[in-house]
Structure formats: C-alpha cells, structure tokens
Length: 415
Image 1 (cartoon, rainbow, N blue to C red):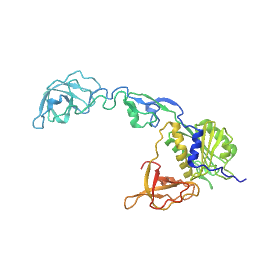
Image 2: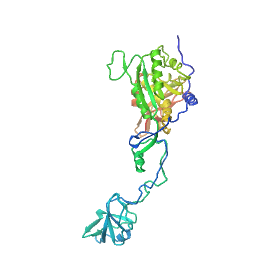
Image 3: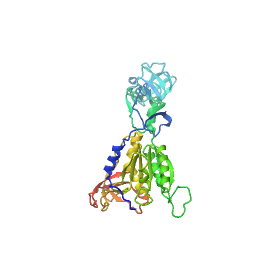
Image 4: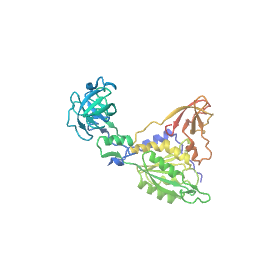
C-alpha cells in the first residue's frame, strides 16, 4: 500500500496549529530549599525585605575616623590620633569616635557612631596607643553605606529568571532559605527502529548506536526539562503503542525519533492517531531538514515525533519543540542570537520547502564574517550539527542565496 504525507504545513502553520491546540504554561509551583535551587526557574518576584547591608560597614581593615581629622596628612607630616577602642565583625560598636580619636575596625564591621570614613591600616602606624595617619581620607571613603547593595522594597529578581550562582547568592543575601520555583516538566524520550542499539552494548552487524535519545535528552535539560529515557523499541505497532501509552502516563511531553517517514516500518503516526483525542495535528512540514515531523496531542499532552536522522531530529527539536518545553518550564522566551554574515558561496533551497542550511562562521582576510555551509554528508550524520555555529533560513519562494550576499545567521549559542 502506498503511503503519502497529508498536505505539508509551513513551519509557521505548524506552530500556529500547535498553539491553537495547546497553550504552553508552567505546570505548577513548588517550594524547595535554596541549596537545591540551581538551574530552577523562579516562580515569584523577590522583593528585598531589608537594606543590604543593613548597616554602614567598613570595606577595609584600618581605623574609623572623622575624615576632617585626617586633612593635611602626608607621608612626611602624619596626623596623630588617639586610639579609642576596637570594632569587631559581627557586633555592634559600643564606642563613639570623637574629634582627635580613631577606632580600630575590621573589614565588614559596623561603622561606630561619630566616624564617617576609614583609613586603611597600610596608611597608618600605631605607637603607644596613638595612630599616625600618613594619608588623608574623604568623607565616606572605604565605607559601604546601608542599602548600597540592595534597598528595602527593591525587586531584585523577577519571576521567570533561571537561578544560577549569582541569583542564588542574592536570595541568600536577603535571608531566604527556601524559594518558590516552577515544577520541572518531565519529557519521555524514546527511539524506534530495529537497527538502533543502546550505547554500551556490543554493536552487531547492521546496527547503529542510539544517538537521538541522548542528544535529545541533553536538549531537554538545556530547555528546562527532565528527560525520562524510555528505551529503544522495534518498528512494531503493538510495541510502539505500549511504549507510547507508558510514556504519556509517565511524562508531561513525549519525544520520539524514527518511524515517521513513508516506509512500511514507519508506524508511529498511525499509532499516535489511535491513542486519544484530538490525535495527529501535524503530519509533515515543508522544511529541509525535518519533512517527516509529526505532532500529536493526546489527551492534553504533546507528542513530537521527530525524524530518525540525528541532525534532523535535533534541529526540529530546536525550532519547534524547544519553545513549547521552555513555556512548560516557566522560562522566559528569549530571542535567538543572530549575526550578519556574507554567504561564502551560492546556496540553493529544496524545491517548495523552507530550507535551513547549517553554516560555520569564519573571517576572511578583510576581517569580514563569512557563513560557510557545513558539508551535509549522509543524512544520518550528527557531525553536521556538531560542526555548525548556526543556520541560514531560505524561504520557499526564494531561488537561491548568492555568494557575497549578506544573510542573518541564527546561532545555536552565543559566540
């Protein structure tokens, strides 16, 4: 029986269809310990409850003084002040600095009453209870004022921010031991094909290692999700149906690779159409790579069935599935990084299809940025994406991109 795709959708039409059927929004909120919050997405605005620091503090080891008492101090004509006490870190001062006096102070210690500057220890000499100051200081010199870092009532972090080391440091600074974050979407990842073998096992004749499950799982983690590896399954309708049902029951989204083309073993679309409503919503897109891509919505959960070719699978995930997953994770949608470059050679699209050409970026002898196509080789090659800095997009109705033409290059990551 001859099998053909339904009408191929443009990439824009495919996105519209998915958006009409599914709204990507966070799956819920949970409170977790701050120590476990790295790489999680903040689910609330954080308002500073108090000034940080909460008091004027010294930024150096030295002596707290009245700045005007040091005016005129020079290396050959020091100013002499009387030591009136010591201020240690972690305690409020019990002394007052009066004219003609100085208080020893440690880095981070509160500024005692009466003082308005700190002289660095390196610019002083201590003799018989007196301090010789060899360099004048200005008012507020070597002092961090209360609220200089964060002011009470200031919004220091916003909902949707990804928490890294700097953000977690800010949360700790305002005294938070726990934080509300969005739940992490679970994404089931499974591969199909009798020829596919899991890495770590012996590679028998006619077999290839499963690239897609691992590259897609990494892409899921980069997009704020948690991959759930389901394994490799043969091109058997009963086995595929069982695996997909388990995946849908286990996860919030499903990614499959392979079994979506037009061969007799490509059973994934047929199986998806039987699992729940509304079923298949995208059956092929007019792109190169990625034409066989299939998308289904099964009882409220999206299933992206990607081509078996590693470059095609990872690329279609990048342009179609990743924004959906980031929405489920609560991540802010950021514009892709793009740079302008000159085409190094003439490039042609596939007839009637939006064509994405992987390119390397390099400089010519005039320091101009050139976009050079990455040799595609065989369609199953993962090295096409491995060697590419980004891609050029050629619309369906454009005949070619000429050598030397300026083109936008969409980067896979910031250069």
